Length: 99
Image 1: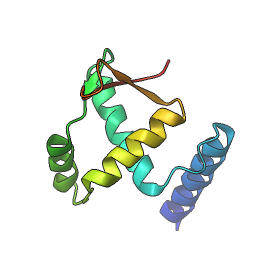
Image 2: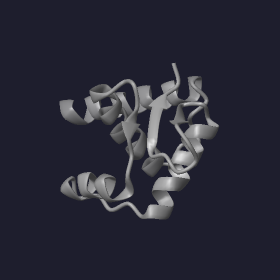
Image 3: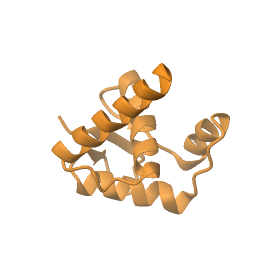
Image 4: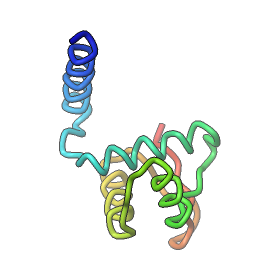
């Protein structure tokens, strides 16, 4: 029961924080993509590459399936919310988190 109580507490804290940041509208898939991007960002804060084939390989190792449309929809959402920004030109696959 202690694990469930901790889990629910973390969920509640996550939802409160999302609301405070104006991110409550992020879908569960947006959040999954966001956390995956953050892992890449921690390895290279000057810009991380996000290529669909590599991304889906990483996700499939976790047992998660992400469509190309979903990935780019989430990227568009995260850019519009001011969380990430695209580096380079239109066809560049480089991104970074907004400071």
